[in-house]
Image (cartoon, rainbow, N blue to C red; front, side):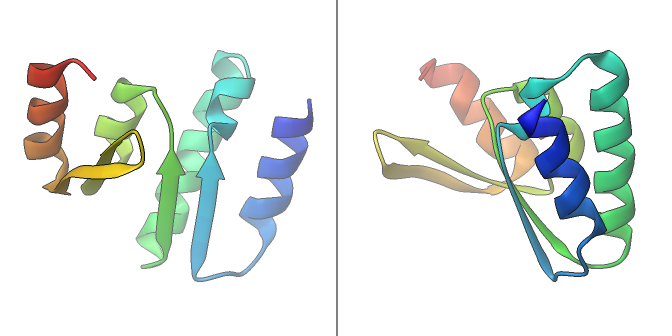
Length: 92
């Protein structure tokens, strides 16, 4: 429930950067759909969204660029498809 509240507050704020740390993992399918819609609206307004997650399907559907970290070190940074290919090959 805290994740839902935090996301609801964050999406209503008029900020240039939105940082989400595993918040989309905190809800049911309906909540995740509402979050996805809100993130797409945020993106359309040319604002930056930083998503920290282990949900690769969500990352691929929402992100243009990905920073892949392993044990706090940068493994790759670039277009989503290229970085996800690296992630899948190395099985971090």
